Image (cartoon, rainbow, N blue to C red; front, side, top):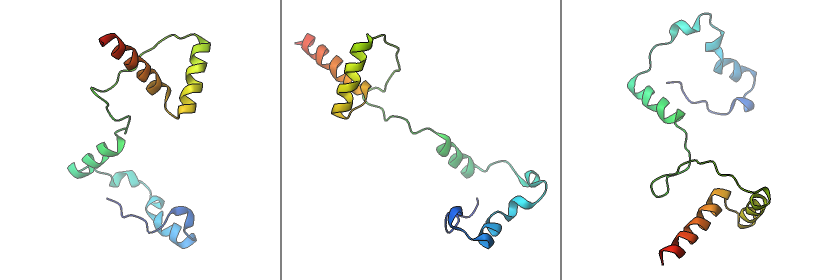
Length: 103
């Protein structure tokens, strides 16, 4: 693994920057590459995994729903006022209706 820089590149002076990037001045630097070790592969898999939305209940499913433009605009306005995502507002509404039907 590469060593961690002591400070960000944007704060380095010319000498520090030259030292930090010296490895890229070599020709055929790709010839020095080798397959990832198990530890490096595990780290790479963790890094490339998208964080995403944490699962709620049994997870979520993306769907496509058609709404009247005015209803969608009012929904967005209310969600913004409540400071919650549109999907959460719609889910609350559906849960409310389903709870009412279960009574």
